[in-house]
Amino acid sequence: MHIAFEHPGQPDIIALITELDAYQGCLYPPEACYTLDISALSQPQVRFAVARDAAGVARGCAAVVLGADYGEIKRMYVQPALRGQGVAALLLQQLTAAAQAAGCPALMLETGPLQPAALAFYTAQGFARCAAFGDYPGHPLSVFMHKPLADDAVPAGYQLQPCVADDFEALLVLRLAAMRPSLEAIGRFDPERARARLAASFQPADTRWIVRAGQRIGFLARRQLADCHYLDHLYVQPGLQGQGVGGAVLQQVQAEAAAAGLPLCLGALRGSAANLFYLRHGFVPTHEEEWDIYYRWQAATKVTKPGV
Image (tube, rainbow, N blue to C red; front, side):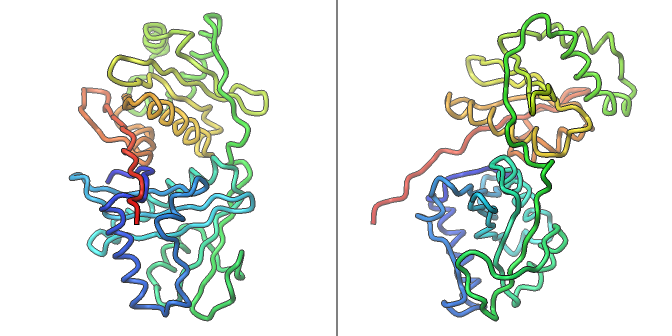
């Protein structure tokens, strides 16, 4: 399943949201349905994620409205045939990463008591019931839920800073620390080989440090080729992985590729956690070699809402 942020004003997405509206309309009266239309979902503070199957068919969607106090989950929907297969969890992970990157301290949502599967899903994802928030009235057909995003999970304030040739040894130390568990798991941890591979591709002009609170916590190396941006390396110190920093940096690199009108390509060590990380961020496998799996990400074409 391919998960990516897209513009909601596409015909197949409009059809998907129409399905969602029909489903909710069968459960709740209009006064208990707090929906966002295509125009509202197209606003700059909204991130709209779409789940597409291998044929490119839209099967699910969800949005997060980013605010200073919280990010609000809206328009979460997965077609019935795909439910129970983890699609909703992948959509929520995408929205959570966007909220963390924007510095939101929490996620909030409104759902209904006539959707027990949704309530169970959100509870399993760490949400707890809470009082009404924002402009919502305390309606008996509303259930409000809240999930804090840990302070250390918010990659606020990270910066990308240039590297110089003399940084090579420091970059190597960080790469060895980040890659060692995955390489040891397949019996291929070899510091000298790792040094040679990094040296073969090292170009200071293409390499940037990831810096937070004045500390170098990771680095990335990205080349611009004729037909794509190629991400050679993206590493975060092991103790800081899983906190949203890598996801925020990757989204920035994706945005750079999208701005250039090019896809973003990369390779990941077979069996490493990086494979799931890239799949969650919308990358699609293209081919495999003995030790690596290669991926490609292409920004969705934006479609403006047709005039009424």
